Image (tube, rainbow, N blue to C red):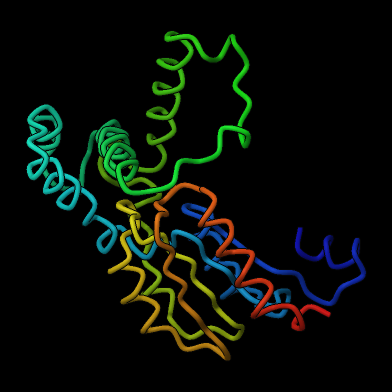
Length: 224
């Protein structure tokens, strides 16, 4: 795809940007074929299953502080990762969204148009079931899914191209402390870490603005 884009737009290289699971794929692409890319921009960067497993303890601490006994009970029943039940990740993911929402700017409604047939309680329940089903591959039945293979430290922290990480300060899934530690280990021709207030794991206005700023300030000359 990257080669096709360079040919399609008459460029020597293209910008590689990956967010969340895409950031794990993007980091591998940047290591394998750096000559195809001006730079790698990682948003809500995944680092490793072990390092990013801090979400459970962080969210349960937030729930306890808030007196949210229902969420505490639910998360305590799961126990800390690693898990063998793929549904566990979805339960934590929804708790993450709940507590991130208290401190972030909401995603503008205009970004998504939900058709009436997908706004019903049944449609929302079906979406949740579908999301949980997707975690079969991510978590696996024995904790041996794709997540178990994630480890950017093992992949190597030396990059042959610039690396820019954009991180929501309120991200409870890929937490800033984890991203910051990985960033400090990176060796690259140029690197920057942008921590974004009022932003969590999922896209919102501040997070998109920060990505635009990185592209404008760091990359305006690299892909010409």
